[in-house]
Image (cartoon, rainbow, N blue to C red; front, side, top):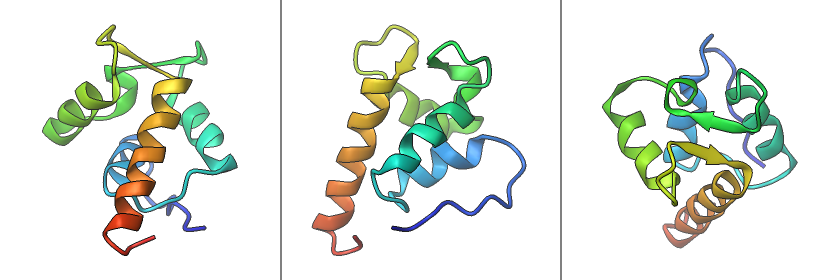
Length: 92
């Protein structure tokens, strides 16, 4: 299993790393969700997700029901799809 490097002090690195599928769907996904969910409400809003245009696009894609939040099910689904895409490209 590849792990996220924790060198960047803010949470935006999690979204970027997920977007390029640099880690596997595993027990780490729950810990990563909790790390991004800064207020601990069980939902990730746009501000918690990270900054920038890349984050905007990814957030819109991951927020499947377009309610302005990413819940744990949406998070897991996005990571699973990222992992599948990575495997398809021979990077997994």
